[in-house]
Amino acid sequence: MPTNANAPTLSGDAQIPLYLARPAGEAKAAIIVIPEIFGVNGGIAGKCDAWAEQGYLAAAPDIFWRFALGEEYDPDIEDHFHKALDNMGKYDADQGVRDLEAVIHFLKDEGVAKVGAVGFCLGGRMAYMMATRTDVSASVGYYGVMIDQMLGESHAIANPLMLHIPTADHFVGPEAQKAMHDGLGPNRHVTLHDYEGLDHGFAAQGGSRRNEEGAQLADKRTSDFFAEHLA
Image 1: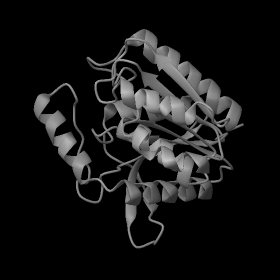
Image 2: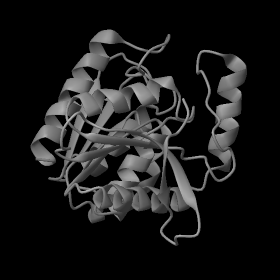
Image 3: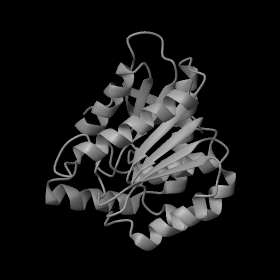
């Protein structure tokens, strides 16, 4: 899915490509849709379009733009999957969260008062990092990876954060899940939802990983969460 807009980096010396979906009327708020490792593909664009239908200005940045500009992959194709993993290995998350902060600024310049973020897989980790390092108004992570390794940042969470945790996630095992519950459960800003027996990618827009019942439940919770916290 081609990107159709650009956000200036914080330094202003480069442009971050993104897919931008506008609502029919005035946007009530904005939502950054942070992709999985598969790029701004049709599924991610579809999520942006769905948020726009709910009245939000939605933007999905190409998070790998610095070294894999415009690449998009199908997780059901093995070769694509491995290429996407290679890109993940090259990704600098610290730089990435600064790029996402730049997208917040870009969206506020569009006239919205509040900006939320929702991310998937690596994007779920980035949604957590946005909650700890930026002024994002509310954030949601689906099956975020490596969050258990970043719990030392949780004291900096100042705005609402929701995490969707599938209990059979083969990328985020039981020990990591327990650490997340132990480290984040007591935090008054954090809401955790477990999805018994579901695996990584259960809320993908389509494809073999999607679990329809689980995806609809998580998406309803996310929609209600943003309706409350981005109002």
